[in-house]
Structure formats: structure tokens, C-alpha cells
Image (cartoon, rainbow, N blue to C red; front, side, top):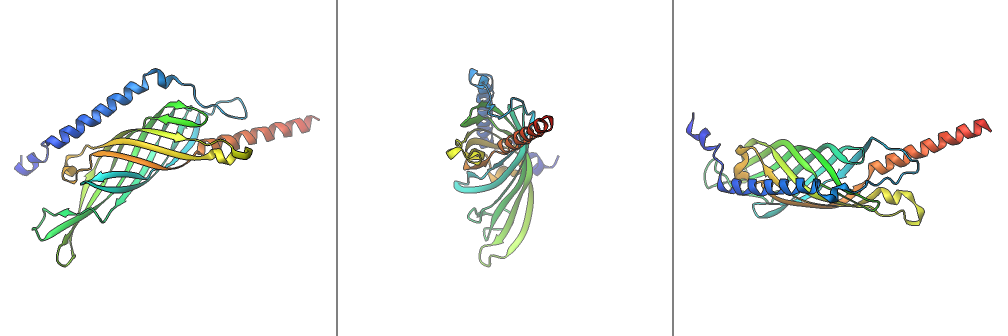
Length: 251
């Protein structure tokens, strides 16, 4: 085996620490799932008494994180479904292009530096711990794939010397809180929007991205649109209109 290839599979001490933190987070998350807290009754605030097995879901997912001790914004959008009001499953797309993150390039000489951006997708499984009328608490588990795009530049001329692509396989776990407002002035659309708070830990599985140091904590604060409530409201309205039409026909 080539010596350079052999070195790429050595797990460095910082990765070992990151892995331990990640597994600790996973353990705590599973303990919460099987705790009495997760036995809470779901929010069943519907006009008609029926259960929707599958409802649409979407989340704005702008994440704040530290890479090389600098705060960066990772922009994302999630789209999925809520199953039986107990779980969210779906996919998310994410993008980061922060020009403030720079470091010396090891490709050529000390006269070079690099910038990079991320493009990746995530599959997520998000069981609810609590579903209440005015708030939800959930545990998102994530696994994704994407590319880390590295641009090597000359320090003096700022000319692009080379573009390098590396595989990026992130895993994540977190704790999410959704706040859902009431129907102010009896106006139902107020209940379709809210605020989401998310905090978690990200661990990069693939070892060819070790030098980019993507492991670490992340948090998110942003708006939320509850597609499940919009869907439920529209479906209930449709059912009520059908009942009225049947009643009018009988009369």
C-alpha cells in the first residue's frame, strides 16, 4: 500500500475527540427518546376528528457554526413529511461560501493560500419528543453527502492556481424547539408560521476532509412555516364543504 494513502486513514487525536463528543450526543438523544418526556400526547388540534398519516413539512435551516475559529453561515432548506404526527423524515440541501475563511495552502508553496465552500445534501430522521399546541421539541438525526470545493490562490497576484474537490460526508444530531403562535384575532394563518431554535453537533465521517476541520457545534435561529397545519386546515375545510353540500342536497 502506498505510504501517503496509508496516512490518510490514521484517525488523528482531534478526530477521536470529535467522535467521542458526537457519540455522547447520540447516546443522550436516544436516552431522551425513551424517557417519559417522549411519551407526551401529540398536538391534535384539527377541526374534524381524524388522523392524517402523512403531512408535508418544510424548514428554513440557516446554520451558524465555527470553522477554524471563525463563524460562518451555512444556508439550507429542508423538505419532508410528518408521519403519524410522530416523526419527520426528508431531505435538506445546504450551501456555504464564506470568503473570510482562508488558510495556507499545502499544495504549492508558502506563497499560496486557499478558500473553500461546501455543497451538500442531508437525509434526516426527526422524532418528536413533545408536540403541543404552542411548541414542539424534536431530535433531528442527519446523514449527508456533498463536496468540499477548495480554491488555491497566489498570495501576491490573487490568481486562481487550482480547484480541488473533496468528498464530504457529514453526520449530525441536535435538539430542536419550534414555537407556534396562537391565532391572534381569530386569524388562523397566524398559526402557520413560527420560530425555530436548533443546536447540535456535526461530525465529518470521511477522512479525506480531516484537514478542513468541519467537526463542531452548530446552532440555528430562524423562521418556520408549518406546512402540516396549512395542509390540515385546507383538508378540513374541504371536508366541511363536502358535508355542507351533502346536507343541502338532502334538504
